[in-house]
Image (cartoon, rainbow, N blue to C red; front, side, top):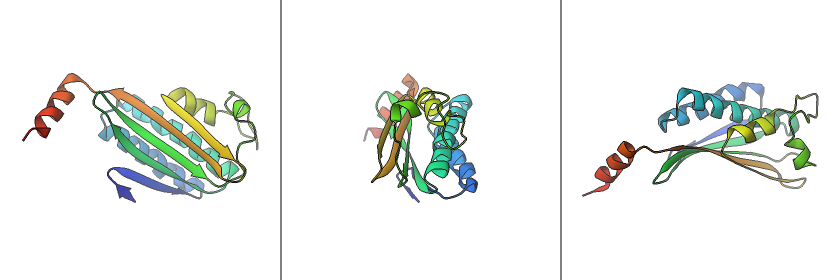
Length: 150
């Protein structure tokens, strides 16, 4: 599903990791991120999607572009209705893993992305919202200004 560049990926099995990564990488490419940054964004998304599968079983990933005057961003919002995260502070420490995990998903994604927030509850599940930004260069700003003039 897509609205204004927004993409929704249902997460229900390991097979959903590939399209989630691919959609994140494609959106980053459309927004002019370098190939390296697009790969990093896809890696962060992969870690969060993996957490949904391991801890909640199912969920969804929303990806959308963020366009501001001086920067572009990829916003990823991952939601599940699982049991929530009991100790967010511990879960954000590298190496703190449960269910035989390595404990790299959340801390890795937090380190990669520029903005990172977790909202979690045993009743509501968990929502992770993260954004990676890149500055718009002067040529992009000039083109946008020219295109918006009558």
